[in-house]
Amino acid sequence: MGTIAVLGAGKIGEALLSGLISGGRSPEDLLFTERHPERAAELEARYGITGVTVREAAQRADLLVVAVKPQDIDPVLADLAPVLRPQSLVVSLCAGLPTSLFERKLPSGTPVVRVMPNTPMLVGEAMSAVSAGKYAGPEHVKAVTELLSCVGKVVEVPESQQDAVTALSGSGPAYFFYLVEAMIDAGILLGLPRAVAERLIVQSAVGAAKMLDEGESHPVLLREAVTSPGGTTINAIRELEKHGVRAALIAAIEAARDRSAELGRAHED
Ligand SMILES: NC(=O)c1ccc[n+]([C@@H]2O[C@H](COP(=O)([O-])OP(=O)(O)OC[C@H]3O[C@@H](n4cnc5c(N)ncnc54)[C@H](OP(=O)(O)O)[C@@H]3O)[C@@H](O)[C@H]2O)c1
Image (cartoon, rainbow, N blue to C red; front, side):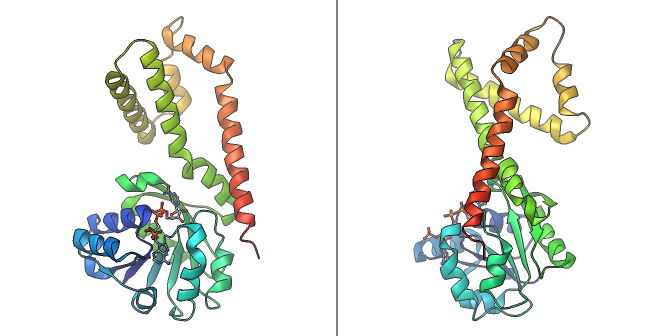
């Protein structure tokens, strides 16, 4: 994969750099760009990697990961366009920005791969979905999949499905945090101390996630296994159904998909 440069080493950019180093990549093969000298110095000290200008990153890197906020993309592409080497691979982590935007602003034929990661990248458990742009081939998707595997799991989807991915796994951690928060409130209502309620629910979430991740049973079977006839769980399930929680989740995720599509339309040709 050669030298990798991360353009914009904020939360996600730093998580990727940190994961690459933990995954065994030498700091000498990594570069980053940052706007603030203090932030650059902090990252250099923490990881032993070198902060450079966008021009230098373009000249030295084989793969450039763009990790600035979507609203900051224009100056980055303007800096990159005149100096990008022909075979460099550009990887965008920017939510909602189509590969066509990069292809339009960068030299003709630049391979671009779009990625929708999520915040568990900060703990090495990201779910990332990758989509090839017009000039990116299977070798580019393979390189990006390898890159992201050091910070979590990776799937490939057609770019037309990126709005659905954004709604499902991009925003997904927020739905789980929301559910956990509501369950902690329930514990408080039942008279448990907050710290105890938190521990009970967070560990239940970790345990349930592990069982799901082991993938030996479907979620329905796992749920049925703790739903005994006439027991406590079925009483809770009846209330969840009565309050339309399943329908609410489906509608919420559909609304997130629609908003993602709306934001993306602002960047169309
Ligand atoms: N966080 C998430 O949950 C998440 C999930 C999926 C996708 N993403 C995507 O990941 C990208 C990064 O998100 P984030 O949460 O990591 O944002 P962030 O913490 O704000 O990081 C962006 C970094 O880029 C720097 N930057 C901006 N313009 C620059 C430029 N011209 N040259 C060099 N550095 C520049 C920013 O510096 P300043 O501090 O000066 O602004 C900041 O340090 C976004 O496009 C977002 O859509 C994020």
